[in-house]
Image (cartoon, rainbow, N blue to C red; front, side, top):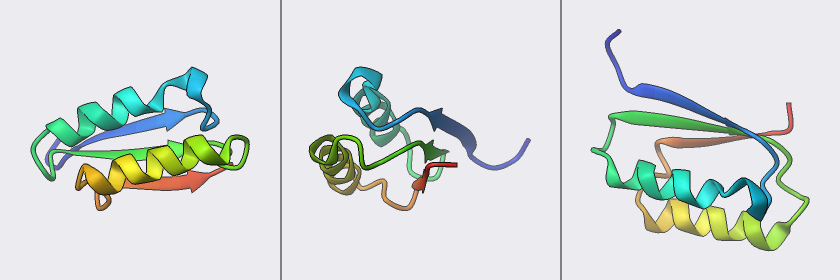
Length: 71
């Protein structure tokens, strides 16, 4: 299929789920080659959620990552 690889992370944003590793991997790939949808509660550990948000911004992948919240 044409277009970027589409990934979905399904889980609450808590350290045990280790979303930071996936965010780091996405930030190392070519821009536009991948999109990531993050689905899960974002208010369980606000400090960890802030870490994730900062990592996305600093990695320059804010256009590639979509936070869906709890579905």
